[in-house]
Image (cartoon, rainbow, N blue to C red; front, side, top):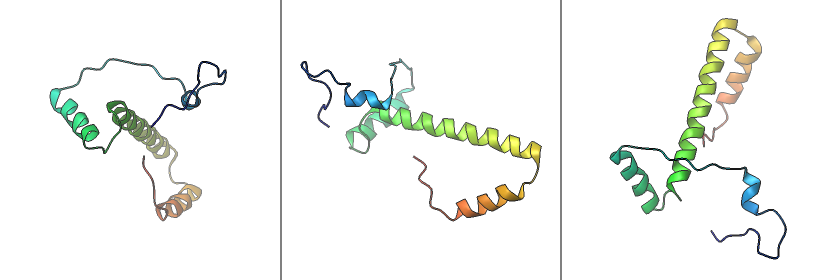
Length: 97
């Protein structure tokens, strides 16, 4: 994808900045996981290692939030309104990414 941000004469905020700030970190991974990431990128299925790791971490964050919700619901007991909502939402296709 071509860069669509600021030029030297343009004083607007680059488009890429509208998605939030990022930090670069170094992570050590086993060789087989790095090979897996590289295979996905080389095949064109993914755009970068960072994109794969970001999606996986977002999915893990959602999973942990769901587990916290389950624990809260266990403590509170049954709720007819939530049961109706669960039945309704189970009928709607979910996009997990």
